[in-house]
Length: 422
Image 1 (cartoon, rainbow, N blue to C red):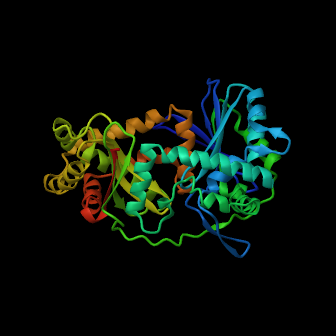
Image 2 (cartoon, helix red, strand yellow):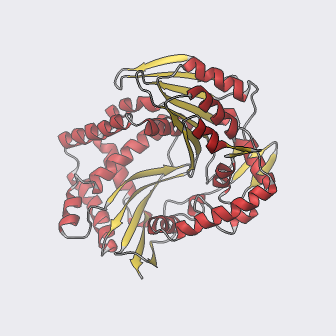
Image 3 (cartoon, rainbow, N blue to C red):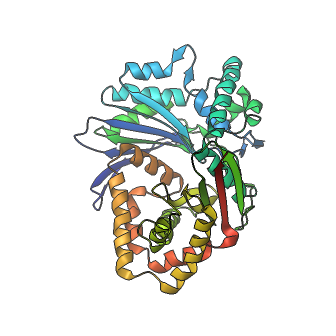
């Protein structure tokens, strides 16, 4: 085990790679009674193609989310009730590129941690239970289809991307989930729910050696290789469609637009791309930008407007959205503002203030146990130690941000999704 003190953040982190390949990171917060643990696999909704034991698989869309639901079931046991009996709250989520299981507690931490590791690492997929889960997820899909915020984003992804699986909702479709079988769930679990493909992150006043001991006891010391992800999608930087439109039960029109960016590199490059992208969003249409004030005064946007930089395995984008009676005018104004920025440039002092403000928000986010666990895990899979982000901020220059805007804020990279009232 290694212990690192990050002076700029006043954080002490214990790190260890177990014999079975599991990475363990314990962020020590002395004096706190609350504790949180994230157990995360590098397997999300976009990872539908992979190799395992020399065989190639293409699994149905939505299987990562389906698997997340099924992991809470152990033979003859109620996992949620067992956590409740320990005084712990347990939950999980599936994103496009990872699946996380987590709990919070103030007592019985060791027992809760052992239960978390046990149920996530124990496959149990009886046929009857899988069939029953299809009905539950079918209802969940229907709920999301009736939610404007979900639909405006999912329509946007279909406009932007030609082949990347971000085109498909995380939950899959009503058709794709009916192709999921207990055998396919077992294959995905064997491929990606192996310790070498996972990370355990704990935040709180806990003993790191105890965390490692529990992990070794529950998961064992044997190392198994993970499935090899395949990424067959080949994306051009032009969008599939410039805009798309739908009608739903909304009080006023809502929109989301995005500008297609190159996929992130790995390691420090991933952190740098995100920081540059976030600063570009602030410069171009953030609350401190000239454009934001102009759009607000014209009544084209209101307090619902916001945006930033987003990335998923194999794709990235600058996005914004909110309520507006004329989303096309907002889009045109953003595209027109980019060349003006190129000519004007970014004032040095203003850029330094912006960097300090952005880094300050990230530092404040570390007060959240949930945000800390999430970012530590997500950046681990990108090959970067998240607590090194201040070093990256220090070296980012205005020219990088302007180059990003010049490259990305182009009409051929832009898609707009609008939902109008019925």
